[in-house]
Length: 322
Ligand code: GLV
Ligand code: GLV
Image 1 (cartoon, rainbow, N blue to C red):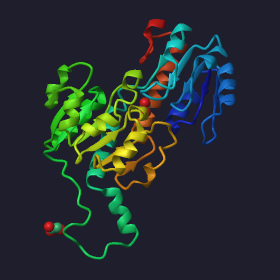
Image 2 (image 1 turned 180 degrees about the horizontal axis):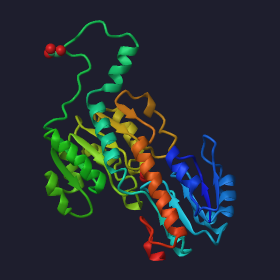
Image 3 (image 1 turned 60 degrees about the horizontal axis):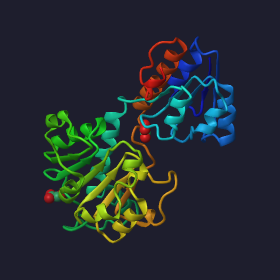
């Protein structure tokens, strides 16, 4: 089968694809940029299997170009770049890369939480710009993390992994989700509704599944419920936050700070966001370690090989097509 890879993956993953005897032909975008729509269309028309990325919009009209498309293997745990309903209707299986990025994404969440509360980016900037003249009792004071309350919205794999880290810091842990999770007691996380969580938490971290229900889950009203001393962290999907409302809340110091790995209109940012000193912004690097990006690639490769060999797909998000 012919496999189309829309962007270079880590070396060992590329090696597996290139050496695979099962793959008859491989087409790879070797440019250091995402494909244009036209290039994506050409590739889809050519291939049997596409190994896609979050930046590739795999919609119904793209799928229509190739009625024989056999598999969409997405290189991410999320799949909101794919019209899964359309794929299901066309009987095309879609796979993702769950599990392997949980701990790595929780690590980044923790790094952001620590960095925003202790003003690490501001402090680094302060040093580099030669402003450090003498130690001062009130210089760059931040907020404690230990013993504070962490509110986790969306208690799935990543939310749980974050709670484990918070336990080590003696935090009081709350979570909200569509339903209570039995495994939450393992990390001492208490179930509550989202508004009580927002009201009580010193740190609010977002980990919901992104869909229409979680679109703008955090908007003006929710930001007003949060404590003025609190911080918001988002490593899930940008549109979970109404970014315009967040810029207003941060400018008016309705909350103390925010740390964001994802943005509402990635790669763009809401005007005003980069002018604020109480926000840390990083470019969607939640799973960006060599180990994890390699593990994600291996899962994508295993899904592709399983499809070619007609065996069970390790991680299919629409198993009803099988
Ligand atoms: C990253 O955002 C992913 O969904 O893997
Ligand atoms: C800080 O450097 C201290 O010694 O308290």
